[in-house]
Image (cartoon, rainbow, N blue to C red; front, side, top):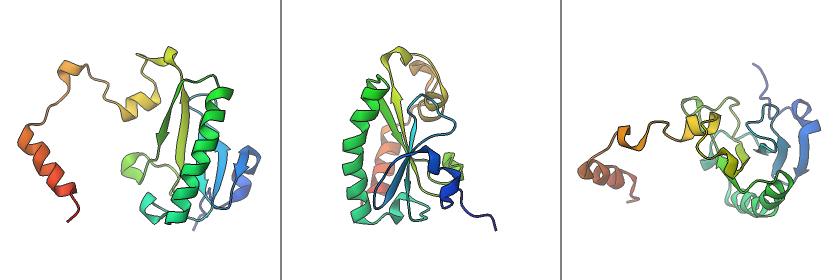
Length: 145
């Protein structure tokens, strides 16, 4: 069985710019934009739900520290924070990781990989609509009981 790419430090160690007790922060080898960062848990995890509370707290603290530095370094005015969980969601490495992708106002209105994947590319008037009772059904399914 092939070892997980993110469990094999040698596959990305030259791209690490920060590491903490729980995470590696690396530059993506196929960036959507300059500064495209991956935040990779050191433990092999498949999903967000597998993170421990202390890891989530660390992740948020690290993001508060590093996202402003990424934005300043790459002269970005916004960013995408994304995790693709499972093949169905487009995950290519079966190890939980987060993408931080710096964005600029110049990109507004242009379709790129992120917008094609995460945002509907159809004009507003052509987007499918769901009716109110369908929304209520979906909300009820999501409510914690």
